[in-house]
Length: 277
Ligand code: UTP
Image 1 (tube, helix red, strand yellow):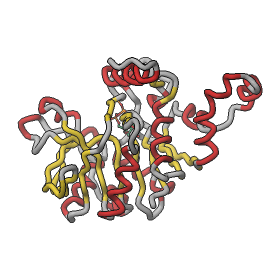
Image 2 (tube, protein in one colour; image 1 turned 135 degrees about the vertical axis):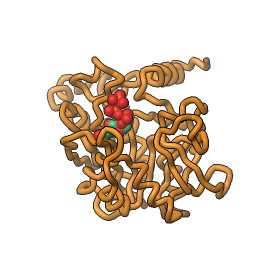
Image 3 (cartoon, helix red, strand yellow; image 1 turned 180 degrees about the vertical axis):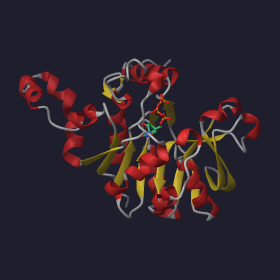
Image 4 (cartoon, protein in one colour; image 1 turned 60 degrees about the vertical axis):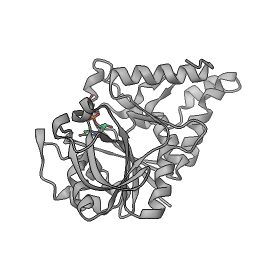
């Protein structure tokens, strides 16, 4: 249904300095697997096998990760260590990967516009890999959203409730309930102070976007710090009644922050070692 997924991955990751000085934030491992690999697995599960990445300076490790390393393959060939590469080999086999570079980091909206040549004129998924979404034993978050796209044929944003004090870190939605877990969005506010927030429903890093978003981003003037926000273009779609917000099933970890990253690491390690705490 939706075959393409865009990964904006050009951000500087300043909250993880110095670790991210010469290494992409998206290559930070949660236990033994980099964040970007979790994201691509989720996209493939949702049927999106054409993967487009918007990268930037110092992000070459992302391309190398989704390629064969012949010396390494030769070195571990025939040993038990080969099992550790099974997951990534499957992604390399089943997906196509294309890359483009964002030259100036002018915000998420600008990063998505930069990815336009990798997408074309079709609806597509967007994954911000620093948001790790897990739904063990169930369907992944992006696959849940594809199911909704089938019904509504409009842009879908994933949302979760956040503490009122945290609204200034997110895009916050306002809208009319369509059913328990779905809201038709009427308005979005980018990073409002708690007293200005229309709700405590925050947009997280999973989207399905219809391709008219590109033209809308193009006509969005730069805002704070010269950045072009995705929220402004989404607001235009919302005015036309074409954005649904979805309270997904599963758990999201904000791995763009050190605290969220540590929480995700402990959770995944606990699950793997059978620790129920
Ligand atoms: P963040 O707001 O998390 O920014 O971007 P960041 O630069 O990655 O991290 P900090 O805040 O400095 O620690 C959200 C997502 O949008 C991408 C990032 O790579 C991340 O996946 N992004 C952001 C771009 O691709 N380009 C941009 O210009 C900005």
